[in-house]
Image (cartoon, rainbow, N blue to C red; front, top):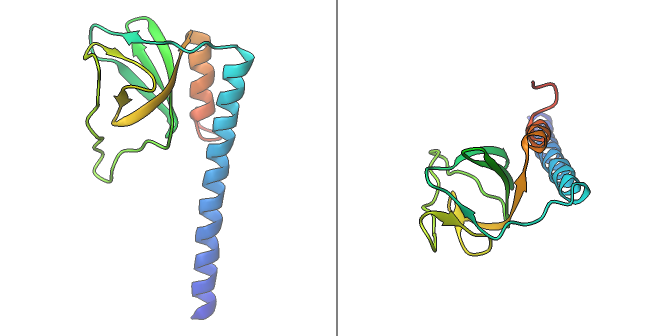
Length: 133
């Protein structure tokens, strides 16, 4: 009985450790992409209609407003609660978001970078699980 319990705990710890390594690898790859492409931070993103978003991981997501695309970086891990809800946003201006001032999905925005279609594709590939298309 103890052997089964010990084995279960070891498998669980190993699975958790593997997940954090994948997330750390993704974050390192995204930071490298930002540095290599010399992406500049955007001071404000103005929008007329609702922003579409694509989550890369709990620290980064892609925002799309019409044809403009942005990489949004959170200051901390940002996830939905157990029921799929997110916290309400705090905005200085209802038609704009600013890093370090506003929130998106209820989490403080650390930085926003303007990106193009090619970088969007690369970022989406970074966020996918190995073997996923």
